[in-house]
Length: 207
Image 1 (cartoon, helix red, strand yellow):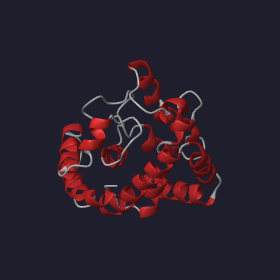
Image 2: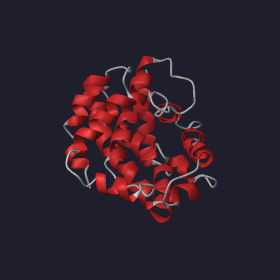
Image 3: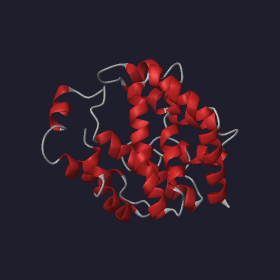
Image 4: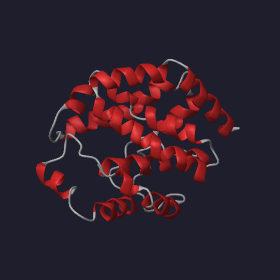
């Protein structure tokens, strides 16, 4: 039943205005976030076919909308700023998952559930929020969270220091990114299967 709802909502997002409007806004205001979201969708789509018996377009849609909350007016200036954020600013940025959920939950409640907690299963600095009790939702949230983290670890993000930028140009970034996933998602469903799968696609993520 959940699968059918996710498929229906994904089709509605593809054919409706929400996805188009979000993409249009991000293209003008946050091109980096747009690129990141589309890269997450491009990886999570095939992963949904491989692990969750879902059409790839469901994963692609989840990836493309998972950071829609970063357009929120208090969060956006922090997203656009280069350099490190203060602890208080970072806490505000972490609320983007809640704003993403608010934007989606009325019309697309099941997609909203996947998006809402995709950071909550991390072992290191998890985002606040109740853990999803439904195992299928939990597995999807973990999968999206892993892809999101992996893509982020292979990008030259605005907040990186020069030292971090240099490190990301050195050999071994693929192995370091996969090791980072193991640290972040140590005790979650299907972690080793997902890591093995993502290890096969990480090389093409490197800019």
